[in-house]
Every structure is written in C-alpha cells, then in structure tokens.
Length: 327
Image 1 (cartoon, helix red, strand yellow):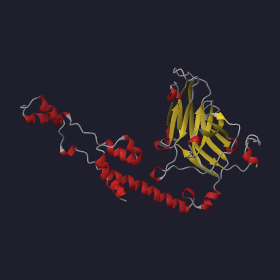
Image 2 (cartoon, helix red, strand yellow; image 1 turned 30 degrees about the horizontal axis):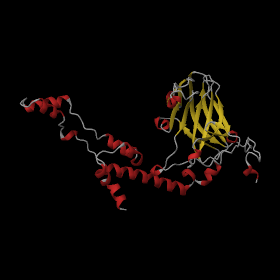
Image 3 (cartoon, helix red, strand yellow; image 1 turned 30 degrees about the vertical axis):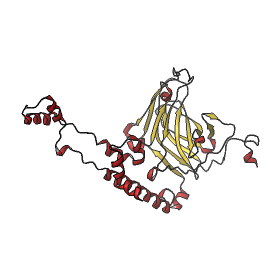
Image 4 (cartoon, rainbow, N blue to C red; image 1 turned 180 degrees about the vertical axis):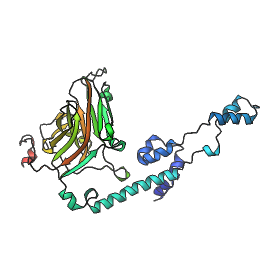
C-alpha cells in the first residue's frame, strides 16, 4: 500500500528519476509522456534577450551575455506537476475499468443480451477520421532491408482508408535474405483499462464482410488468434481476397470456414478451425511479386451471419495428421 501511495503521489518517481525515461512510458501511458515532453527548457525570445542585455548595461562580458539568454521570466516557466500527471493517468484507467464493469453487467460489449443474440451483422472497423487510422499500423520489407514502401491515409471526404505504396521484390543486399517484396496493414490489438490485452468475439457470426476498392491485385487476409504463448505468435489463419480494379466498390464476403491455418508463412498439413471467440487482430498483405505501385481503399470491415452458408470447415483431416480429432 505504501508503494501505491508513493506512485499516486509521484514521490517515488521524483526521487528516483530527475527526468522520466522512455522506458517508463509504457507503464505511465501516453498522457504521462505528454506531460514529460513539456519539460524542455524554454529559450528566451530574441526580443527579451536583447532587452535583458540592455539592462545589464553592456558592463559585463560575453559570458554574462550568454548566461542572460537562459534567464526566463516567471510567466514562461511551464506549470508541470508529476503528481497531477500520474493522478490523471490513474483516473483515466480507473474510469475505463468502471465502464468495462458496467458494460459487462449490461451485456456483451455493453449491449443487452437479447440484442446481441438477434444481431446479424456488425461493423468492427470503419474509417471516418484520424482516430480510426490510429487503430492500424503498416509495415513492409523495409524491416529486413527491402525497398517496398507503404502508406496509410484517409481517403476522399474522410469516408474511407487508402492504403498505397510501391512494391519491390528486389532482395536485400545483406548476403542472407534471398526473397523480398511485401507490404501489410495490420490492426492493433485492442487494449482495456491499465493496458490489458483484449480480444474480439465473433462466435455468433460465420462470414467476414468487407467493402473495398482496389487495383486488381490479389491480397491475403490474415486473422490472428489471441494467445499468450510465445510459440503461437507467428500462427495465423488466412484466405485470399481478389480485387477487380476500376472505379467501383466491391463487397467481399469470406466465410470463416475457408480460412486455412499457417505458421511462419507456411501452410500446415494439420488444419484447425479459426477460433472465433478470441480474435486478436486482422491484416491485409500484398506479396504478388509484381513490382510497381498499388492501392487498396477500404470503407469498412465487419462480420455477419449468412444463413445460406452451412459449411463448418472446408479442409479435411485424417487420423494420421491429426489423431486427436479422431479419438
């Protein structure tokens, strides 16, 4: 309790650290980082510095003049309080925790249970502003020394997200990598109060539903399972999405039963059904080995229940490959 009291009062960090380091930011949060960014020493404006030198009467040397540049008035000193920063961060997360508890008692994701049971479709991601783009991240083969570039911005009239860039299959000149050429867009893992990892529950739906507009290139849609095991971090479930090209939007419907299991980019012989009750993230990958510019515009990403689709799993297993299924 004493440590918690010191943390909330800010005395622990004030005594141990004269200035917060970047290593503390994941624990203190973004709001605390904004407070620390304002701690830089303000520099006096040229007008005030010159007037201050005149008051000195030019009777002191150059050294005194240089020191005078660092003298600031009381109005320019930033009003920064570590106590207030930590308290605001704690209040913010406790408020999130309260909302989660209230939503849990009200029903799944804050909706009444009868509404959730009758729900046939749901929009999970849509793009109507910068806060929607912040839920995503982009990456390319530049992380391994490649030359592909990818960018993400809001589309026309802020009604969609535009993923664009240039694909290059030229291998890095590092003597190790022999293949390259990919760009990807991945959703961030949802976080709850105190940065707890959350997941999506799509168990009552059977189809992924997207409204996109592309340039005719094929994309790979990847869904990752929420897991705490390090060995499963590279496992995902994937399926293809083919864009038509042209100025018209297309609605893409992919049954979850079609997604195949892969590990480290390799399709496994033993296939598993996609666990819809603990979805961590979704992503889109371009790696068709066609060098040049590309774009993919996304209106929304959602899920829905297709009553005409009755297939449970599209891939076969055998007792030799997966004996646990046939016990």
